[in-house]
Image (cartoon, rainbow, N blue to C red; front, side, top):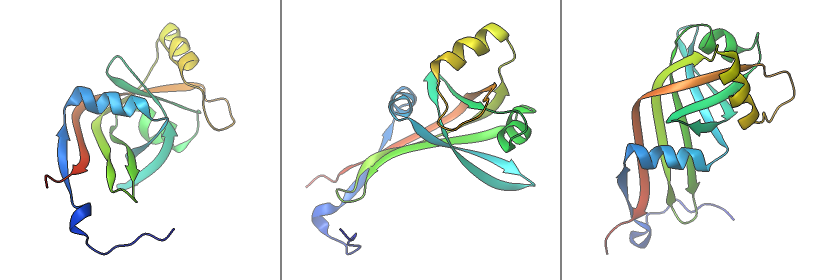
Length: 146
């Protein structure tokens, strides 16, 4: 089915702001998000599977990858975005978290978190990266009041 871009008043939507807690809950409900970071002074984006635990976003990476070098090597400022959108119904939500990425260095904690998130790609994926939210912004597309 082809997407119809014509304006239709019946399909008019408004943005409803989500609380931080509801935003994190929604992030936890989807398996895939995007980590946004700086590479060579320019924005870069990588899709990753993730989990939300203790109010933080956790991803896995391999040593020697871009995420390892640009994000885990130091406390990089990153954004993390996930959404669930229905383009036909024009409904859904989007959440963006901005915060600091940090390599989990405690061996026991890293082992615990590794057991909770299974990578989608092959490889060792021996690093665990935690994103500590500083700013959480979430919006939901809802039907406009009639």
